[in-house]
Length: 406
Ligand SMILES: *Cc1c(COP(=O)(O)O)cnc(C)c1O
Image (cartoon, rainbow, N blue to C red; front, side):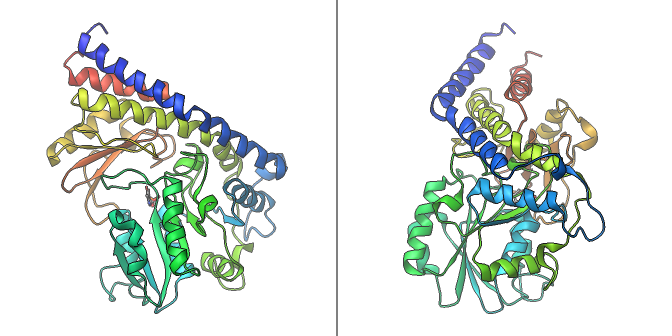
């Protein structure tokens, strides 16, 4: 394409990616090394890729996968289960596993949309934290250093979300999370520091457990699945809540012993193996989008991108959100059949959401995807992408369209 504006925008974006690589280029190889070391320590081999049936008793592939993932994260224990259906499920499991009636939880900043359904609006909503008698306070993120002011006698868990979710903020860095936890524990040493790690894994060289988190939950349909695997949850745990958590997963007395691998765990092992690379590619794509976006008037203005591969862009009116997303899906490999072209009431969300993702794993958002809630400021969130070359091709095509070249 010879257009001068196009050349200028894309070469600036490429320069930003090169600069980013100068600073963060080692993250991918360090994380790949971390993963490989854990594969060696856990002696992963073909036996671990076999299926199991029925109760799944003595499923070695599953148990070893959990040890592998705990090893990578510096955790004592992990649960990775094909029976955990989503990130929200893993977070809900962690919360209901730790909190008892009368307990209080402090959330730092607005949590991800689906958490409001887990908390519930009032005590009458069935199955929610509120109905279960757990009280929740949201402490403003801007006042993170005074989070302990929101603690009460029965405050048992501090909830911190690493990625931005549908908020126009940056992702929290692992060291920042560590500072908040240290401050909170200075006031209440026994508090459980919980981190929603969705979209966080492998974006930095450390994970939150290394800076003081007690329990983290994430999803293998995002970063650690490397665009190949399915959901899961992870944690490091003191013995007492470890049994609570595994009992919550199945039933008291059964815990983690049951749960078959109905699909080969090779997808999960391979997903974890490739994840540091896929995340690095997605991060480069996010830098490219954040730089090229505003100048191309693609989505405007982009937020400074830091600590994650999700970039957000104000569109300021719902119509734009509705027209832009479907256009974008034309360049996804899975094409239209997998993309939701209308905003809809997706399970778990308060507002209607519009989502476009044409990935190979349905709903996978470590594959290139764009989505947003139908509420002001009508921001679109772009994330994922399995290769930088692919993300760049898609974005260049959008920039070309915006400039009226194609
Ligand atoms: C995606 C996400 C979740 C929920 O995961 P689902 O698989 O969509 O249920 C929770 N928190 C954050 C920060 C997320 O990005």
